[in-house]
Length: 87
Image 1 (cartoon, rainbow, N blue to C red):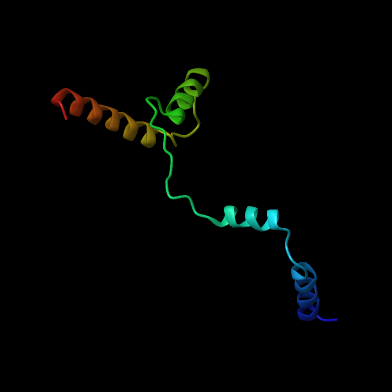
Image 2: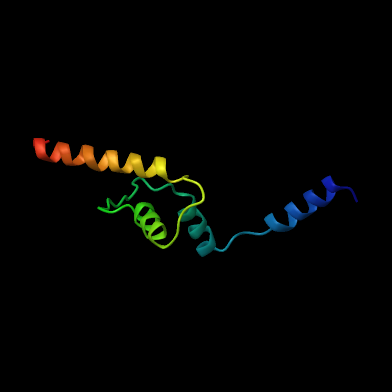
């Protein structure tokens, strides 16, 4: 038996027979793509907070998070400027 025949046989075994009604409904629900995406806006960035804690405990060998930390500081600064301007 070659691979193609084995694959065909396995497919037949798995697809033979009817699905139970409850299984069919569950499968349909799983396939439905949600219309909405829920996002939660936080005041604190967990990456920034964790990085600050690690930097208090030890010194980093490389500065891989420096660029991210500077971007976050710029965003916080921009957000503060907008809030002061009343936007």
